[in-house]
Image (cartoon, rainbow, N blue to C red; front, side, top):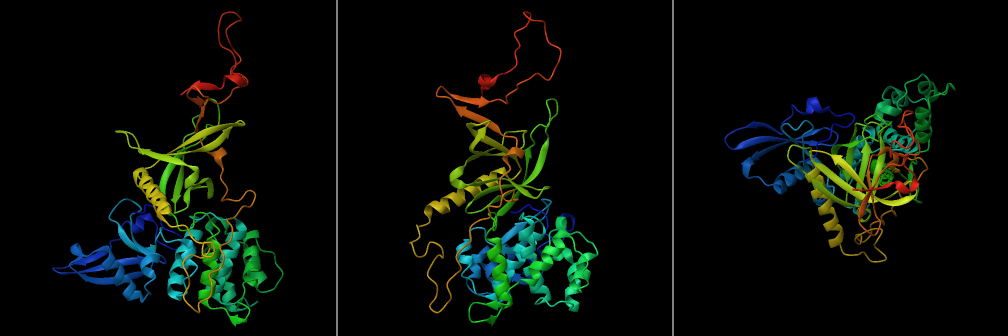
Length: 430
């Protein structure tokens, strides 16, 4: 079950909580509503709903949408309940479907469904992106919705009017510049708007060396390929909270809301408000567990290597979430899948299984983003962690160092044993 809120262009939690995927129930027939990523509805009339398997329901959706057999692996049925009320069914990407296989898909409708889901996650900032990447992705959305860029064409004028259809809300700065720029009047657009306009101009309209005109499927694929650079593409998302670092000596840090993104590759903790990654770990870089003590909130524990003032330490991060056990189980299952997968040969490690004769080879996956200051880079300094070291005698907790006293009044010399903590006194039994 996914407990995240609605993406851009979709109903929010309050409206979604009123949904039901079973609209009417009779003696033998029920009308089942299955929602797609673009918020359209697939109505199904099914008999004997209580005995219907998920596989049969999945097949019914594929038949209505006339999708090829590959859709059985690409998509899954999700139970979505933002407010933990009655869940509704959503037909969307299977978190266990590898990205390398996605690049081999040629069916335009399958590509469109994947594109719509990825676009919704980008616009809702569920996939945090740097400005440059938001502009490049937004430009492809412009191309899909408005056609090829043509200065002064009427359709281009709607770009500014529906800017939040192309860029995440926090990048939409509605000035007067973009409309005039599209009409060639030389006015200046805002940074995000101008970057979007420039990227829109540069969208390629030819596919390959043969110069054939690009199809919508070409642009869907280009959008997905760009999203593959994001380390959390295709993840399952969960709600949680983490402790904030204490801002001062006498101040409590409190908690901040986060999204925990889990995929076949690893775990990412994303700041829900600031729209950037706090921590990104591959499975080989972490240990984990979950606890659910009575009368306390469940916790997902992530342990990883780090530093504390130049000293190597083990760091523990506490993620408070009602979905802690579900996250822990998903991590375990992803690791089991990775261990069970057979190693790929030297020729197919980047592209997966052999392609059908006559089909074009899949593009080589691009490296993940590594910009300095990128929103996809970890910001461990924004996390409050528990730090431990093994000094050969046992596990000891690392306490923060204090080089000066916060207070000006102390006992007179010779009357007290209190001293300021020095560099060598930073280890305390945990």
